[in-house]
Image 1 (cartoon, rainbow, N blue to C red):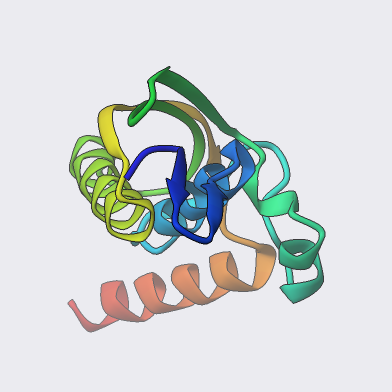
Image 2 (tube, rainbow, N blue to C red):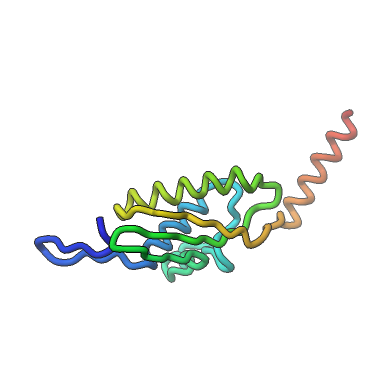
Length: 135
């Protein structure tokens, strides 16, 4: 499918915001991704307001070929190369499946590391301390 296609009933146009939202959601499905862009969706209301697509740049190279650049914040402790390869594949698969567009590139910019909240850190340290005592 092309970004804009004429059918016998009229035109179908896929807006860049739709492609960006699909890409952002697909990236966030992968373990190790904390969020895309600076402000990721915190709840369903953010998704409705289309805040989730931020951090995704969509470039149309021609009528049916698209290049994506996604800004990602990873969770602390994530193996970045492994996670990045999984993100690229999941984004490509979902965008192509949902839109019919071909992706020539899925570029990732790792923008930061999200650290665990205070409660998670306390749990990690308590677990590590108990394991050290058992040794």
